[in-house]
Structure formats: structure tokens, C-alpha cells
Amino acid sequence: CIKNSGRTKRERIFIMDGYSLGYANIALVKYWGKKSKDPVLPYNPNISLRLDNLLSKTKIEKSLSNEDEFYINDEKQGPEEVNKMIKFISKFTPVDREKICIKSYNTVPTAAGLSSSSSGTMALVLACNEYFKLNKSTQEMVEIAKEGSGSSCRSFYKLAAWLEDGSVEELSCELDFSMMVLVVNEDRKKISSRVAMEQCVQTSTTFASWVEKAKKDFVLMKEALKEADFEKIGEITESNALAMHETTTTSSPSFTFLTEESHRAMDIVKQLRSQGYRCYFTMDAGPNVKVLYLKEDQDKLYEEISKLWNKKIILCME
Ligand code: 2P0
Image (cartoon, rainbow, N blue to C red; front, side):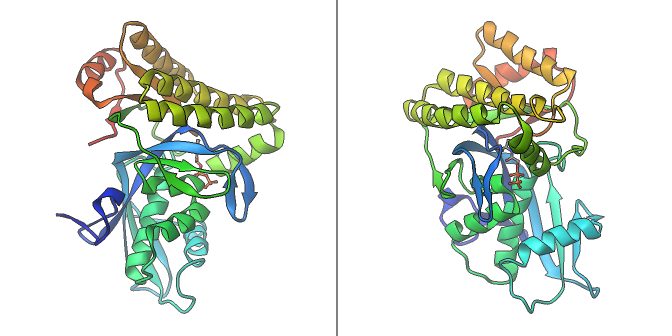
């Protein structure tokens, strides 16, 4: 029982059984570094693809206790998580509101570099809009979401560009993309994206060259999307991800999100490509490897990858 909550279908903003749905997105050109924190502005324009099967669903109810409560997957969150969430929603909800209970479910592992912050933030903003009857437009919710998690502003569109001036644009491409995740580890990451990217901004010796490359990649990616040139799209996606990850190893202290298993997954993608399969990898603030491919190739690619990757694989599109 999925019903569109009165908005256009293209925007894909759904309410299901009283829950607001937020989707994860994976960047093809990454956002890695804030030029400004208030408002949140990225150093470089970035582009993402929304993953319709990786989502968060959130419902707000009146709290039955005297305090605000927050549950993720039925697990009561501690004061630190509650305070972080309340600080965020206080920016756009009524000052004299009643205490609330927020119930959120992630279909993706939380904080494992699988974009749960973007899906969670989008779902939370939509749920607040419903519960407090804020009547915000999509554009207004995009602006709000970005203050909770920068990348979440991109989840409102299938293909989104978040620009340096803070605006978010919907892009289009005639290709039917899909992604699968080669799961290396589903644990919560030890260092948050926010802290990690700040450290890279402050100390990475390759940060300036990363920004310069990412700006060029953005222009090239827009062209490639327009031309529907999948090979070009894939090549930019891979090299952009590698340049982003390089800023972690060149920061001080040096660190990496990637493990030996991540490198093994990347090698599998390269090996399959050399055999003629159209597939490319990208990684975010975690060890898991996402594979970009065309939907029409899914069955044969999944079959081949399953032979080489004996751990969990998540298919990200419907
Ligand atoms: C991205 N990531 O473009 C990049 C690539 C992770 C790696 O955006 O500090 O949770 O809340 O703005 O949005 C993850 O960072 O960070 C992210 P904040 P966010 O998808």
C-alpha cells in the first residue's frame, strides 16, 4: 500500500503505512569537504544516483513519556543521538512543540558507508513535514535536509547535482543505471564522514588537487550523462572515488576506509571489465564497494560476481 502523498510521481516522495520514506544516494562525483558550514556548502559540485531499494522509513508520534525519544530499528537511542537529532529538527519545527517519539527503520546497515545518513535525514525531514503539518515544498525540504546531512539533499532526485552555491538540480540521463554493493563489513564506522572529511580538508596534502579534479570531473560527468556514454561515466566514477580516498591516506594522521577485502572487490570489478562486462566501482566513507552497471546487464553480472564474491551482495534498485 504505497500512496503518493499528493505530490508529483516524478519526485517519488512516498508515504507508506504512515511512514515517510527517504532514499540513499551514492555519489558518482563525490562531496568531500565543506567550503562553508553555515550554510553547508560543498567545496566542489557533486552528482549522485538515488538507490531506490536502500531506504529509511520514519514515523513521528506523540511521546508517551516526558521526553523526546528516538528509535532506530526498534533500538532506543542514547542521549547523544537524541540531542543531535533534536538540535537538527529544532531548526524547522515549532518551538513550543510537544515531546515526540521518532521511530526510524533502515533497510541498510546504519553508518556503514551505505548512505544511511542521507536516507535517514530525508525520511526525518519528510516525517516532520507530515507530523507538524509544515507544508514545505520539495525545494524547501531539500534546503533543510542539507543541514542535517549534506549529501541527503541529493536524495530527493533520481540523478542530482549539488552545486557550490548550495542549490540542488535534477539531472537526467537516458541510461537505466543500477548498483550492487559488495558488502565487506556492515559495522558502524569508527570515524564519521563529517569528522573524516574535516580532517582531510585541514590536513590532506592532496586536498587542493582533489577539489580541482572533482570540479573537472563534475563538468565531464555532466557531459557524459547528456551523451549517455556509460564507459565515460564509469571511468569518471572510479577515478573520482580513488582521488577522494587518496585524501584520507595523505591526511595527518593518515587513515583509510578501505580494507584488503575492498581492494579484492575492486579487483573483481576490474577483472570482469577486462572480460567485457560493463561495470565500474565506487566507495564512500566505509569499506563496502558499490558496482555501477546498466540494469539490462544485471542478471549476467550478478551471476559472474557471485562466483567471485562469496560474501553478501545487495541489489540497490527495484
Ligand atoms: C558523498 N559522502 O558524496 C560523500 C562521499 C561520503 C563519501 O556525503 O557532514 O553524511 O553530514 O554533510 O553528507 C557523507 O557525508 O556528511 C558523504 P555531512 P554526509 O556521498
